[in-house]
Image 1 (cartoon, helix red, strand yellow):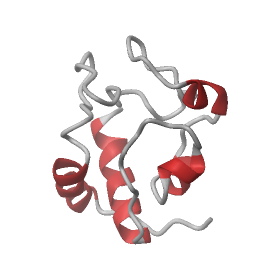
Image 2 (cartoon, rainbow, N blue to C red):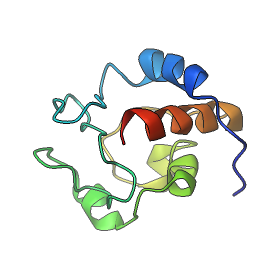
Image 3 (spheres, one colour):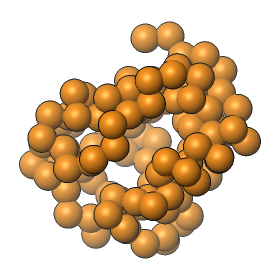
Length: 108
């Protein structure tokens, strides 16, 4: 799946409206309904410290990269059947690329 270039500023706005109610990004940030995303790149699914994941998430065994997040964010429930993530996904490629660009900056 080819990913367009992302705009981190646009991605920050998307994060605020679509993700921040369930996720934090800062180092040492709290887990909410979803896990803290700091350090997500290079981490395996279901492995954020202190968060209670579904077996589906733990067993998926995917390593989060720009490419895997791009595919996941299209339709999380299809990518990881059995996940408790209620988010329906971002259908527009540009929105997914923007969000990933933001996450690369905010979660590093």
